[in-house]
Image (cartoon, rainbow, N blue to C red):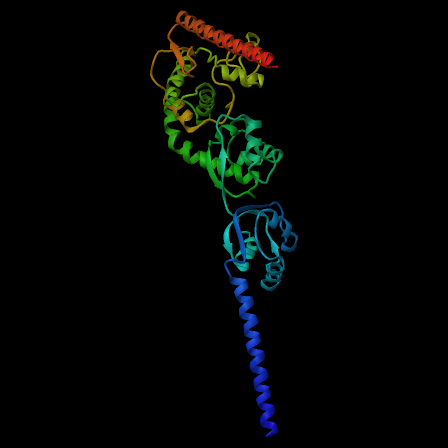
Length: 358
């Protein structure tokens, strides 16, 4: 009877132990796999370097990610996801500890849209681009001058900027400058080189020369529907062996975008098309695809002069001779003077109003 009672007590003890163990195990397993353990409403984590989860707690809280600190550290140890990898992570909705920690531990980054704007010079391009990535402006600048990368893609340094085709591209935040540039060059080849190489050959120019002309059109023209007409004008000048006399190249030469002075047109610079014949050595910005196709498919006409329209529309007036061009230029100058007069008058009125109110 004593032995039977002992055996019964042992069985009861084991049963209690197993029930307790299973309850704890199931409770912990549920906490590990529960999809409400980590919650956030579109938090974005930028982690420049890899590190330990235990060092990330404060950053997670600051980004609005909700979780239990002790449970997260317990889960990290139990699941052996104690570290995280550098990257950009979007945390949106609810996660189990396992899904959240494995995402960071495996480095399962979320891509983002890199926006490459049109009409940028070198400095503007490297600054605006680097602000979107982990790399710095200096690192991107160095990569754009890297002779090994340029040889690999068979391109000269002064042509590289023109191939940074404006668009939005899905990439990873931790991409290196070299990876970014390689991707951009592949995109350019897909969108421009392969589709338009034959057309460029028909015109007797290279793709790079088409991009140079396109960059001038990009700077000069505000409205897409005028690009082919401006392209036709520049082609007329090139075919007649006239100087291009494109104001954007002068602005590029002096390094400042403003209304040009007479002295600016005389600046000695290889990009100043008031002094050189033909196209400048390289593009003055990164043109849109619409500007590139305009350069390759110019409108057929006899215009060789243009001046901004004197109505503030942003369009141009085109002429076939210098006498008409001078007349239209005077209209443009008179319009500018009138706009200046109106601004000065408004400024005086504001000053008078401010003085009277005191």
